[in-house]
Length: 362
Image (cartoon, rainbow, N blue to C red; front, side, top):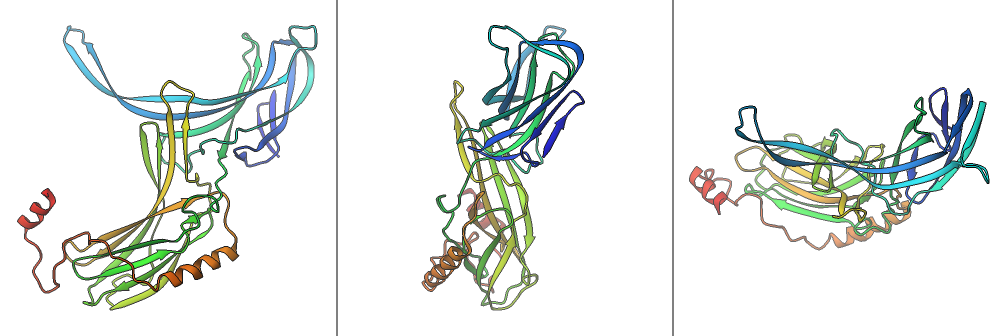
Protein backbone atom coordinates (compact mmCIF):
# COMPACT_ATOMS: atom_id res chain seq x y z
CA UNK A 1 0.00 0.00 0.00
CA UNK A 2 1.25 3.49 -0.83
CA UNK A 3 1.15 5.84 2.15
CA UNK A 4 2.14 9.47 2.58
CA UNK A 5 1.42 12.27 4.97
CA UNK A 6 2.24 13.79 8.36
CA UNK A 7 1.48 12.59 11.86
CA UNK A 8 -1.96 14.20 11.55
CA UNK A 9 -3.10 13.22 8.04
CA UNK A 10 -2.12 10.01 6.27
CA UNK A 11 -3.34 8.97 2.82
CA UNK A 12 -3.07 5.34 1.78
CA UNK A 13 -3.58 4.57 -1.91
CA UNK A 14 -4.62 1.20 -3.31
CA UNK A 15 -1.30 0.76 -5.14
CA UNK A 16 2.26 1.60 -4.09
CA UNK A 17 3.56 3.12 -7.32
CA UNK A 18 0.97 5.93 -7.63
CA UNK A 19 0.99 5.16 -11.38
CA UNK A 20 -2.38 5.18 -13.12
CA UNK A 21 -3.81 4.88 -16.61
CA UNK A 22 -6.39 7.45 -17.75
CA UNK A 23 -9.89 6.06 -17.16
CA UNK A 24 -8.81 3.99 -14.15
CA UNK A 25 -10.16 4.31 -10.63
CA UNK A 26 -8.07 5.87 -7.89
CA UNK A 27 -9.05 4.63 -4.45
CA UNK A 28 -7.68 4.61 -0.96
CA UNK A 29 -8.22 5.72 2.61
CA UNK A 30 -7.63 8.94 4.53
CA UNK A 31 -6.66 8.78 8.21
CA UNK A 32 -6.75 11.86 10.40
CA UNK A 33 -5.46 12.08 13.96
CA UNK A 34 -7.25 15.00 15.62
CA UNK A 35 -5.12 16.40 18.44
CA UNK A 36 -7.69 19.03 19.42
CA UNK A 37 -10.63 18.48 21.77
CA UNK A 38 -13.02 19.70 19.12
CA UNK A 39 -12.38 20.69 15.51
CA UNK A 40 -15.10 22.31 13.40
CA UNK A 41 -14.67 22.24 9.60
CA UNK A 42 -16.77 23.33 6.65
CA UNK A 43 -15.82 20.24 4.63
CA UNK A 44 -13.08 17.72 3.88
CA UNK A 45 -12.32 16.98 0.26
CA UNK A 46 -9.75 15.40 -2.01
CA UNK A 47 -8.67 17.36 -5.08
CA UNK A 48 -6.93 15.91 -8.15
CA UNK A 49 -5.27 18.46 -10.44
CA UNK A 50 -3.55 18.23 -13.81
CA UNK A 51 -1.22 21.10 -14.63
CA UNK A 52 0.69 22.27 -17.71
CA UNK A 53 3.93 24.20 -17.37
CA UNK A 54 5.65 26.09 -20.17
CA UNK A 55 7.71 29.21 -20.77
CA UNK A 56 7.52 32.17 -23.13
CA UNK A 57 9.94 34.94 -23.96
CA UNK A 58 8.46 38.31 -23.00
CA UNK A 59 9.47 41.95 -23.31
CA UNK A 60 8.68 44.76 -20.88
CA UNK A 61 9.37 48.48 -21.02
CA UNK A 62 10.05 50.66 -18.00
CA UNK A 63 11.89 53.75 -16.86
CA UNK A 64 14.93 53.61 -14.62
CA UNK A 65 15.64 55.86 -11.64
CA UNK A 66 16.82 58.62 -13.94
CA UNK A 67 13.71 58.51 -16.12
CA UNK A 68 15.37 56.83 -19.10
CA UNK A 69 13.36 54.31 -21.11
CA UNK A 70 14.59 50.74 -20.73
CA UNK A 71 13.67 47.46 -22.41
CA UNK A 72 14.08 44.10 -20.73
CA UNK A 73 13.68 40.60 -22.15
CA UNK A 74 12.78 37.86 -19.71
CA UNK A 75 11.41 34.33 -19.46
CA UNK A 76 7.86 34.05 -18.16
CA UNK A 77 6.82 30.78 -16.52
CA UNK A 78 3.24 29.62 -16.95
CA UNK A 79 1.45 27.11 -14.69
CA UNK A 80 -1.98 26.28 -16.10
CA UNK A 81 -4.40 23.80 -14.44
CA UNK A 82 -6.21 22.01 -17.25
CA UNK A 83 -8.25 19.60 -15.16
CA UNK A 84 -9.45 19.58 -11.57
CA UNK A 85 -11.53 16.87 -9.91
CA UNK A 86 -12.89 17.55 -6.43
CA UNK A 87 -14.12 14.55 -4.44
CA UNK A 88 -16.04 15.13 -1.17
CA UNK A 89 -14.60 12.99 1.62
CA UNK A 90 -16.69 14.14 4.58
CA UNK A 91 -19.69 16.47 4.62
CA UNK A 92 -21.93 17.90 7.34
CA UNK A 93 -24.70 15.63 8.48
CA UNK A 94 -28.22 16.37 7.39
CA UNK A 95 -29.51 19.60 8.90
CA UNK A 96 -26.03 20.77 9.96
CA UNK A 97 -23.77 23.34 8.35
CA UNK A 98 -20.41 22.14 9.69
CA UNK A 99 -18.44 18.98 10.45
CA UNK A 100 -17.46 18.39 14.06
CA UNK A 101 -14.47 16.16 14.77
CA UNK A 102 -13.58 15.25 18.36
CA UNK A 103 -10.16 14.22 19.62
CA UNK A 104 -9.02 10.85 18.30
CA UNK A 105 -8.60 8.89 15.09
CA UNK A 106 -10.89 9.43 12.09
CA UNK A 107 -10.79 7.74 8.68
CA UNK A 108 -12.70 7.95 5.41
CA UNK A 109 -12.44 5.87 2.22
CA UNK A 110 -12.34 7.63 -1.14
CA UNK A 111 -12.55 6.69 -4.78
CA UNK A 112 -12.96 8.46 -8.10
CA UNK A 113 -12.44 7.70 -11.78
CA UNK A 114 -9.95 9.56 -13.94
CA UNK A 115 -11.16 11.04 -17.24
CA UNK A 116 -10.62 8.79 -20.24
CA UNK A 117 -8.48 11.21 -22.25
CA UNK A 118 -5.55 12.88 -20.51
CA UNK A 119 -2.05 13.92 -21.65
CA UNK A 120 0.79 11.88 -20.16
CA UNK A 121 2.97 12.98 -17.30
CA UNK A 122 6.18 13.99 -19.05
CA UNK A 123 8.86 11.46 -18.09
CA UNK A 124 11.79 11.26 -17.92
CA UNK A 125 12.88 14.87 -17.64
CA UNK A 126 16.13 16.73 -17.12
CA UNK A 127 14.45 20.11 -17.70
CA UNK A 128 11.98 21.90 -15.44
CA UNK A 129 9.95 23.11 -18.44
CA UNK A 130 7.85 22.20 -20.25
CA UNK A 131 5.97 19.75 -18.06
CA UNK A 132 2.70 17.95 -17.50
CA UNK A 133 2.15 16.85 -13.92
CA UNK A 134 -0.64 15.53 -11.73
CA UNK A 135 -1.15 15.64 -8.00
CA UNK A 136 -3.81 15.07 -5.38
CA UNK A 137 -4.19 16.91 -2.13
CA UNK A 138 -6.38 16.62 0.95
CA UNK A 139 -8.00 19.86 2.10
CA UNK A 140 -9.48 20.43 5.53
CA UNK A 141 -11.65 23.35 4.61
CA UNK A 142 -11.46 25.93 7.37
CA UNK A 143 -9.77 29.30 6.69
CA UNK A 144 -8.14 29.61 10.11
CA UNK A 145 -6.99 25.97 10.31
CA UNK A 146 -3.36 25.91 9.17
CA UNK A 147 -1.35 22.90 10.46
CA UNK A 148 -1.30 20.12 7.85
CA UNK A 149 -4.29 21.68 6.13
CA UNK A 150 -3.08 20.67 2.67
CA UNK A 151 -0.88 17.71 1.79
CA UNK A 152 0.15 17.08 -1.82
CA UNK A 153 0.75 13.63 -3.37
CA UNK A 154 2.25 13.51 -6.89
CA UNK A 155 0.76 11.00 -9.34
CA UNK A 156 2.04 9.59 -12.62
CA UNK A 157 -0.74 9.32 -15.19
CA UNK A 158 -0.45 8.01 -18.76
CA UNK A 159 -3.16 7.63 -21.39
CA UNK A 160 -3.74 4.08 -22.57
CA UNK A 161 -1.80 3.69 -25.83
CA UNK A 162 -2.10 0.22 -27.35
CA UNK A 163 0.34 -0.02 -30.25
CA UNK A 164 -2.03 -2.51 -31.91
CA UNK A 165 -4.48 0.37 -32.42
CA UNK A 166 -2.02 3.22 -32.98
CA UNK A 167 -1.25 4.36 -36.54
CA UNK A 168 2.21 3.10 -37.44
CA UNK A 169 2.54 1.09 -34.24
CA UNK A 170 2.43 -2.31 -35.94
CA UNK A 171 4.16 -1.36 -39.16
CA UNK A 172 7.81 -1.79 -40.08
CA UNK A 173 9.68 1.38 -41.03
CA UNK A 174 12.19 1.42 -43.88
CA UNK A 175 15.18 3.72 -44.16
CA UNK A 176 17.96 4.23 -46.71
CA UNK A 177 20.68 6.68 -47.64
CA UNK A 178 24.14 6.87 -49.17
CA UNK A 179 27.10 9.23 -49.14
CA UNK A 180 29.66 10.61 -51.60
CA UNK A 181 31.93 7.60 -51.06
CA UNK A 182 29.28 5.23 -52.37
CA UNK A 183 28.51 3.80 -48.93
CA UNK A 184 24.88 2.76 -49.15
CA UNK A 185 22.75 1.63 -46.23
CA UNK A 186 19.20 0.39 -46.45
CA UNK A 187 17.15 -1.48 -43.93
CA UNK A 188 14.12 -1.45 -41.75
CA UNK A 189 12.90 -1.52 -38.19
CA UNK A 190 10.80 -4.64 -37.91
CA UNK A 191 8.12 -2.98 -35.75
CA UNK A 192 7.95 0.75 -35.08
CA UNK A 193 5.80 0.38 -31.97
CA UNK A 194 7.50 -0.51 -28.68
CA UNK A 195 6.89 -0.35 -24.95
CA UNK A 196 9.53 0.12 -22.21
CA UNK A 197 11.66 -3.00 -21.91
CA UNK A 198 11.08 -4.07 -25.54
CA UNK A 199 13.83 -4.73 -28.05
CA UNK A 200 13.98 -2.50 -31.11
CA UNK A 201 15.22 -4.73 -33.97
CA UNK A 202 17.12 -2.93 -36.74
CA UNK A 203 17.90 -4.87 -39.93
CA UNK A 204 20.77 -3.27 -41.87
CA UNK A 205 22.07 -4.02 -45.37
CA UNK A 206 25.34 -2.10 -45.84
CA UNK A 207 27.16 -1.84 -49.18
CA UNK A 208 30.68 -0.39 -49.19
CA UNK A 209 32.22 -1.17 -52.63
CA UNK A 210 35.21 1.18 -52.18
CA UNK A 211 36.03 -0.21 -48.73
CA UNK A 212 35.85 3.19 -47.06
CA UNK A 213 36.33 3.22 -43.30
CA UNK A 214 33.16 3.57 -41.23
CA UNK A 215 34.23 4.84 -37.84
CA UNK A 216 30.91 3.98 -36.17
CA UNK A 217 27.12 4.08 -36.46
CA UNK A 218 25.51 5.77 -33.48
CA UNK A 219 21.86 5.07 -32.64
CA UNK A 220 19.98 7.66 -30.57
CA UNK A 221 16.38 7.38 -29.38
CA UNK A 222 14.96 10.85 -28.74
CA UNK A 223 11.73 12.01 -27.18
CA UNK A 224 10.34 15.28 -28.53
CA UNK A 225 7.82 17.02 -26.28
CA UNK A 226 5.80 20.15 -26.91
CA UNK A 227 3.59 22.00 -24.44
CA UNK A 228 1.91 25.15 -25.74
CA UNK A 229 4.85 27.20 -27.07
CA UNK A 230 7.63 25.32 -25.26
CA UNK A 231 9.62 22.41 -26.68
CA UNK A 232 12.28 20.09 -25.34
CA UNK A 233 14.11 17.03 -26.62
CA UNK A 234 15.07 14.30 -24.19
CA UNK A 235 17.67 11.66 -25.12
CA UNK A 236 16.30 8.30 -23.98
CA UNK A 237 19.27 6.20 -25.04
CA UNK A 238 22.40 6.54 -27.14
CA UNK A 239 24.57 3.62 -28.18
CA UNK A 240 27.01 2.55 -30.91
CA UNK A 241 25.92 -0.39 -33.04
CA UNK A 242 28.37 -3.27 -32.33
CA UNK A 243 30.84 -4.67 -34.88
CA UNK A 244 30.90 -1.46 -36.91
CA UNK A 245 33.78 0.44 -35.32
CA UNK A 246 36.41 1.12 -38.00
CA UNK A 247 34.57 -1.19 -40.39
CA UNK A 248 35.94 -1.31 -43.96
CA UNK A 249 34.37 -4.44 -45.37
CA UNK A 250 32.57 -4.37 -48.71
CA UNK A 251 29.20 -5.41 -47.27
CA UNK A 252 27.35 -6.34 -44.10
CA UNK A 253 23.90 -7.76 -43.45
CA UNK A 254 22.99 -7.90 -39.80
CA UNK A 255 20.17 -7.40 -37.30
CA UNK A 256 20.91 -5.20 -34.30
CA UNK A 257 18.77 -5.26 -31.16
CA UNK A 258 18.48 -2.17 -28.97
CA UNK A 259 16.75 -2.57 -25.60
CA UNK A 260 14.37 0.22 -24.64
CA UNK A 261 14.94 1.24 -20.98
CA UNK A 262 12.48 -0.32 -18.54
CA UNK A 263 11.41 3.00 -17.04
CA UNK A 264 8.33 5.18 -17.24
CA UNK A 265 8.33 6.65 -20.76
CA UNK A 266 5.56 9.03 -21.73
CA UNK A 267 3.70 7.35 -24.61
CA UNK A 268 3.34 8.85 -28.06
CA UNK A 269 0.31 11.12 -27.73
CA UNK A 270 -1.35 14.36 -28.83
CA UNK A 271 -3.75 16.29 -26.61
CA UNK A 272 -5.55 19.61 -26.93
CA UNK A 273 -7.00 21.35 -23.87
CA UNK A 274 -10.09 23.45 -24.57
CA UNK A 275 -10.47 24.82 -21.04
CA UNK A 276 -8.90 28.18 -21.85
CA UNK A 277 -9.48 31.11 -24.19
CA UNK A 278 -6.72 29.80 -26.48
CA UNK A 279 -6.36 26.00 -26.78
CA UNK A 280 -3.19 24.55 -25.26
CA UNK A 281 -1.62 21.57 -26.99
CA UNK A 282 0.56 18.75 -25.66
CA UNK A 283 2.38 16.33 -27.93
CA UNK A 284 4.94 13.58 -27.39
CA UNK A 285 6.68 11.76 -30.23
CA UNK A 286 9.86 9.73 -30.67
CA UNK A 287 12.57 9.46 -33.29
CA UNK A 288 15.39 6.98 -33.82
CA UNK A 289 18.40 8.69 -35.39
CA UNK A 290 21.14 6.61 -37.05
CA UNK A 291 24.27 8.73 -37.42
CA UNK A 292 26.88 7.18 -39.73
CA UNK A 293 30.41 8.48 -39.09
CA UNK A 294 32.79 7.92 -42.03
CA UNK A 295 36.45 8.89 -42.27
CA UNK A 296 36.94 11.81 -44.65
CA UNK A 297 35.48 15.24 -45.42
CA UNK A 298 31.74 15.63 -45.93
CA UNK A 299 31.14 11.88 -45.72
CA UNK A 300 28.94 11.51 -42.62
CA UNK A 301 25.24 10.93 -43.18
CA UNK A 302 22.12 10.27 -41.12
CA UNK A 303 18.86 8.38 -41.26
CA UNK A 304 15.79 9.08 -39.14
CA UNK A 305 12.89 6.76 -38.32
CA UNK A 306 9.75 7.63 -36.31
CA UNK A 307 9.10 5.37 -33.33
CA UNK A 308 5.81 4.87 -31.49
CA UNK A 309 6.03 4.30 -27.73
CA UNK A 310 2.95 2.74 -26.15
CA UNK A 311 1.79 1.41 -22.82
CA UNK A 312 0.52 -1.97 -24.07
CA UNK A 313 2.59 -4.35 -26.24
CA UNK A 314 1.68 -6.65 -29.11
CA UNK A 315 1.82 -10.44 -28.78
CA UNK A 316 4.90 -12.47 -29.72
CA UNK A 317 2.91 -14.37 -32.36
CA UNK A 318 1.93 -11.16 -34.14
CA UNK A 319 5.52 -9.89 -33.99
CA UNK A 320 6.75 -13.07 -35.76
CA UNK A 321 4.06 -12.76 -38.45
CA UNK A 322 4.97 -9.15 -39.11
CA UNK A 323 8.68 -9.93 -39.35
CA UNK A 324 8.09 -12.75 -41.87
CA UNK A 325 5.77 -10.55 -43.96
CA UNK A 326 8.21 -7.68 -44.12
CA UNK A 327 11.21 -9.86 -44.95
CA UNK A 328 9.29 -10.95 -48.06
CA UNK A 329 8.69 -7.31 -48.97
CA UNK A 330 12.40 -6.51 -48.54
CA UNK A 331 13.19 -8.73 -51.54
CA UNK A 332 12.04 -5.76 -53.63
CA UNK A 333 14.81 -3.14 -53.72
CA UNK A 334 14.16 0.10 -51.87
CA UNK A 335 14.36 3.47 -53.58
CA UNK A 336 17.43 5.28 -52.21
CA UNK A 337 16.86 8.97 -51.44
CA UNK A 338 19.32 11.63 -52.50
CA UNK A 339 22.53 11.50 -50.50
CA UNK A 340 23.12 14.02 -47.75
CA UNK A 341 26.25 15.26 -49.53
CA UNK A 342 27.00 15.64 -53.29
CA UNK A 343 28.18 12.43 -54.92
CA UNK A 344 31.80 12.41 -56.03
CA UNK A 345 33.98 9.56 -57.16
CA UNK A 346 36.34 8.30 -54.46
CA UNK A 347 39.45 9.17 -56.45
CA UNK A 348 38.33 12.76 -57.02
CA UNK A 349 39.68 15.45 -54.67
CA UNK A 350 37.34 16.81 -51.99
CA UNK A 351 35.04 19.67 -53.12
CA UNK A 352 36.52 23.12 -52.94
CA UNK A 353 35.51 25.64 -50.29
CA UNK A 354 33.77 27.79 -52.92
CA UNK A 355 31.71 24.82 -54.13
CA UNK A 356 30.52 23.97 -50.63
CA UNK A 357 29.59 27.59 -49.83
CA UNK A 358 27.71 27.92 -53.13
CA UNK A 359 25.77 24.67 -52.50
CA UNK A 360 24.80 25.78 -48.99
CA UNK A 361 23.53 29.13 -50.25
CA UNK A 362 21.41 27.38 -52.87
